[in-house]
Amino acid sequence: MDHTVRVEQVGKRYGNKIVLEKVDLTIERGQIYGFIGPSGAGKTTLVKMLVGMETADEGTVTVLGKKMPNLRMLQEIGYMAQSDALYTELTGEENLRFFASLFKLNKEEQKQRIAYAAELVNLTPDLAKKAGAYSGGMKRRLSLAIALIQNPQILILDEPTVGIDPELRLSIWNELFRLKNEEGKTIIVTTHVMDEADRCDYLAMVREGRVLANGTPRQLTEQYGVNTLEEVFLRAGGKSK
Ligand SMILES: Nc1ncnc2c1ncn2[C@@H]1O[C@H](COP(=O)(O)OP(=O)(O)OP(=O)(O)O)[C@@H](O)[C@H]1O
Image (cartoon, rainbow, N blue to C red; front, side):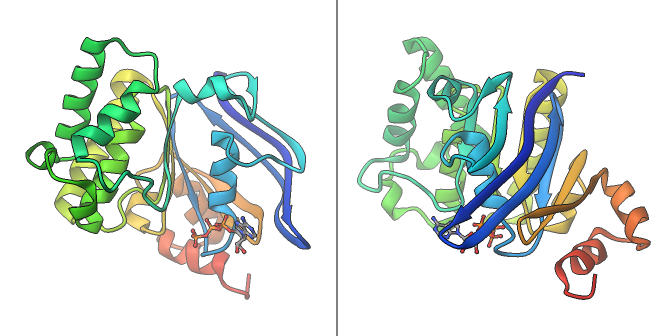
């Protein structure tokens, strides 16, 4: 099997608080892998470790065979954080150009990638406006375009479609499927939206720093004896489980 990400016995604490405990995961190349779980479960901490922005106190995180954190992996990992990290005084296009310049792309590739990413998120007509004047949804879209700019092998998206209207959400998901199917990209998302979780090939249910269950959406509903992922989420998120 072609492992893209391997998380082994990972533990993390902030002060006295245990945020992740004994987490094991394997993500295969070309998978859309979702993390679901209640607020504060540890999903963002986990994805930050995959990107190399947080270090594990225990255990190891390996991405494309390299132990994380590893600065060289930034070329291969596109990351969209939960809060937008944009230069508000720069226009949308200038933001894209700035981030494109951080990667190994020649001038022509930069131009193509900027046009592609802007088009994908429907921002082409707004590229000349300052990012500070964008609406919340437009900022999310610009962040997504930035995550794609270097054409990374792995996309890590922390709640990518929050504040994005249903039509654009659908077109973004169609593009994620295309990236997976045609380009073999590995896509990791965190989400609270159950119809998005349903679109993932594989899910990990995270709660209180542990992976309670993982499997395909169907395996999870079967395992919990319910009909929908929403019910799985409520069971796993509730105290009664
Ligand atoms: N830098 C930090 N310092 C201290 N505590 C932190 C830090 N980052 C996260 N935490 C705590 O770690 C826990 C897990 O947070 P995390 O952001 O990973 O959860 P999450 O599952 O992504 O939640 P949400 O769905 O709301 O985004 C929370 O209790 C949070 O308060």
